[in-house]
Image (cartoon, rainbow, N blue to C red; front, top):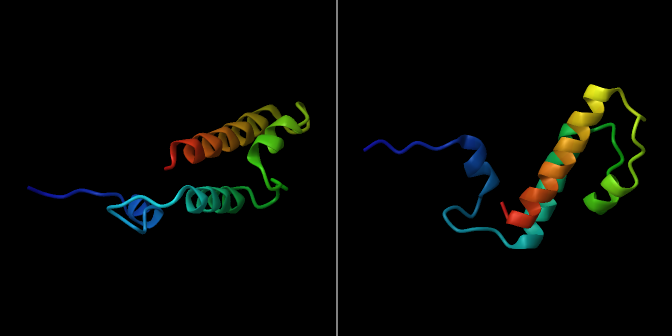
Length: 81
């Protein structure tokens, strides 16, 4: 039987096969998001980033991508991924 894995998943879960503590997950997810969005000032809390975002401040496609990435990061933190 062949074992298949994604390198990103192994890097993401360095304590593999166990899970990381919630604080580590949040730090890691926020760091990944900051790398993906280097020109954005995300602040300390991602929920604030969404609450304080001014709709129409970016082109539509860029805005949808930005909001989707931030929401995905929030969901990953909540799931402990």
